[in-house]
Image 1 (tube, helix red, strand yellow):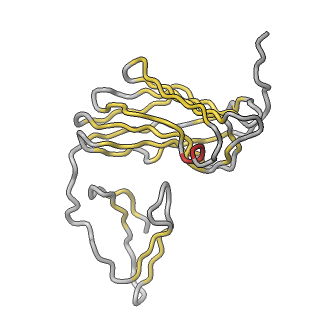
Image 2: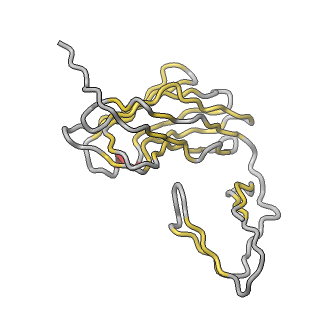
Image 3: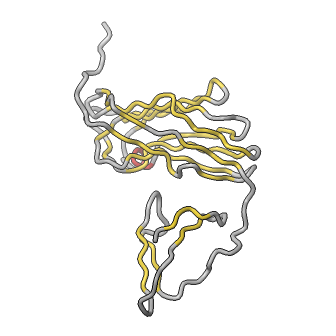
Length: 203
């Protein structure tokens, strides 16, 4: 007889890729990670992703920090039988054992091939709760990997006329930015990546 997991009602779970729409240079490595920002108990993640092999080479993938730092025995695999389509999963082996978000669930390592943009599209993502039941409402929006030459950080200000701190530092996926000025003044705060590209303007 085949025994299927029990089906239970669960709240919707929204996942995300980080960093979203990331840029790497040809011949250099990069990593995309799948994160959950909600407080949710999980035992399993299973994911299938498509991408463009013209611009990106898939290198490896595996369980994220929430799984690897749990101390539990994991059953995990990563396979790519068809070019441009990979499938990976991580399962906690042990009744009643599970991880709790938020945090990193899965990672994917790549290398840039040539200049261009590879869409990263989720064909399927499935999460299972501690009792083995499927969480039906799970979403993971598409992102992209942009392969481009490194852009020197010309024109990026390297000094700040006051005190500026980030906490935690280093960080992944987010940090708090605090600053103090010697006197009241209008502030323009822009964030740049390591390649000198403006990521966002905070104020």
